[in-house]
Length: 351
Image (cartoon, rainbow, N blue to C red; front, side, top):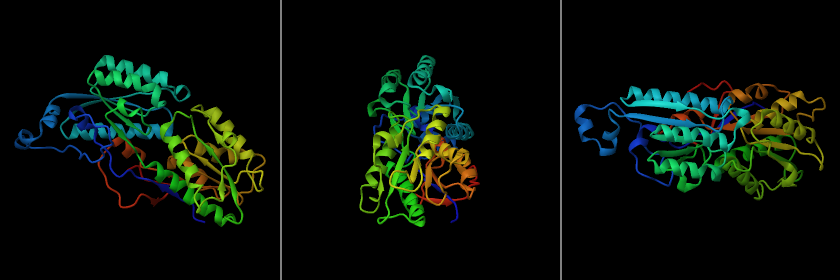
């Protein structure tokens, strides 16, 4: 079978340049157009909130869950591109991009950075939340100071932000994973007459988007179409390694050791974070007692660069991954797609 990567694209992404003048909105607004160069006459006719940003320095802080990991590094590239586009369009924008180190991806580290930005008086903060509930009091504090709050990748509590940019629907991510895994499993002889056991590798239970994908996967495998894919024991078959790379690799290795053919084995593993999906691929290759490649399926959510070496290796059962356009998530530009899924090469172009 031809190996592939499946990409999900958000229907539309907000432009950060509108934040300094936007009103409070509790629902996701993905329809804002990118700011364009305007003539003096056009500027004088522009709405008041847009004119307020002309000639004013706008300080935008972006807070990822962590630094030093390929998904979030790609978001940084997108944020830097967005800042350049806004500057080219005539906005005076300063971008602050900082986050916890990968091995210290905690709510407290995020809060420490937020407190510093609140003291600086930034105009807007965009944050991918490690813990929705725990970070919300600090986000509300920022709002009280007039700072606009956008969450992306994973949300806060709704009343602690002005907008949430959801990179892809929770149902869409789960459907892409389950649908493609089911197709792979059927090619390997599994199906309603020969059911499989699945396992899921998340990150932490406070990750709102990851847990939403987890929940939607579990709902899908209860349907008539996929009920032959069984999560036998959530307590042992859902893994939460956290953000530590060593622990992620260790738990991925444990999961691989449980895989193979038979009712007491796992036949399909979903790594639903940008760390756990490649960990499954790498731990399969590192295993000294590999389950047969034609008896198991590995898949997950990760960047093409993180998965392509496993996808291109015919001896690795990781044949596909799912992701939206990561840098466009950080660019936050309005864009429409005719399909929620697109087949792309493992050597995906940067833009």
